[in-house]
Image 1 (cartoon, rainbow, N blue to C red):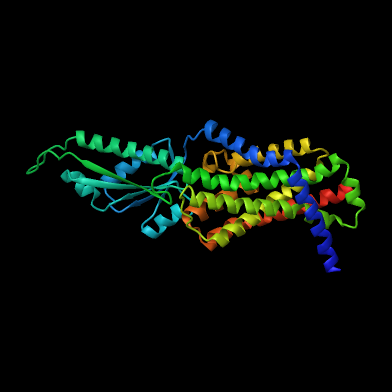
Image 2 (image 1 turned 30 degrees about the horizontal axis):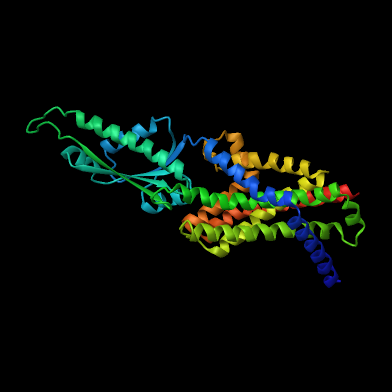
Length: 381
């Protein structure tokens, strides 16, 4: 019985692979569509950064350091400030992407300001978001430079035995974690790996059942010995295999030819891709179940993909979106796939952080696959 089950599913999978390979339109959509989307997003998307969340480690705890921090608090560019008292908490805020940048003020900040020596303020940005990190660091540098110029031009009224206060010299030290040189290719190529995998899976699954209806072979599929579960299984596995293979090829190209270091676990990376693609398979099968033609399926897939990309944090940080849309992103599998791809690739995200982002993906996959299965059975009835 079990052998017959696998034999029927494998036969349908073989048919699906042959159909995909022999259809030039499908191959063109798989290759051309993601490239077109990439060109549009890379050239037309705005990268303005606002509502920057900041971690602050003020070792000085002086009037001068508080005066500097007040400039940040009164800036319209910055939003929430998380004050910490140790490096571990400071590092955790950046690791978990709770903040976009961190400010670290040395304990000799006030003394150096008063004596005219070089005072250091370290600005640490999250290089996983290349453009956002560069812009946020620029905003911080402007505020610090302005404060240093203001202090340098001011004089302190001489008291008994004192002269005029020396000019202040503030040295700004900027470091970018996970992408030290803010290489834009590091950011965009790791995102492309996720985007192409998702687009491939969504398009192939969206066309699978709709193609059968359009070609008039759907009735033959219904009267075959295959159950509805076996049909869905046979239609979903080939896109998964193709997308996984495409992801491995692209990852190899990114590492070998573009010299982008892979910092994480390849096993965790592939598990994350598999679960993410399962969520997309459910969406694609649902679209395919409700569409009668391939044209309808493609339009429906695009209708889903465009807002999914916009709400993923790819173009602009989720924190800059309206609150209602921020909650809506929790239903978007692309959001978590982006976090996992960048985090594992550039940061070396550990199992705990990976599992935290996989939980929403597993829930989304269960919902979408269940919805697709019930819709398909209802269509059969």
